[in-house]
Image (cartoon, rainbow, N blue to C red; front, top):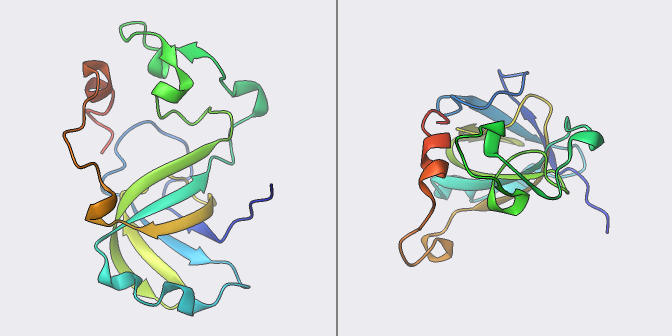
Length: 150
């Protein structure tokens, strides 16, 4: 299996941080071999899913078992697939962002929790029909963790 970046993130944030991503405006620019027309029609959607690669995760930091989210002992130990941390086996991130603008081969988005230089693997429009059709259920610790994220 081979996966190659289709774009790269230009973000004002160069350092990895856990919180305060809600007001971050980022630019996503397609790589040279992908034409601008790949974005045709994208501006008809308010939100996009950005799938990206956590390129700064060191191999020795990857978690394949369980841990306390953010290493906070007040929260229960749970498996890496029950959390959204960056130190996952394939280092893949996914965030729903607001699309602010499209300019040729670039889009401007709000709320992307990816640092400057992050490789983008795919971009998909958010469609209501792909969102959960029932209430989303999650443990209380996850809401506490996300309290200052956005």
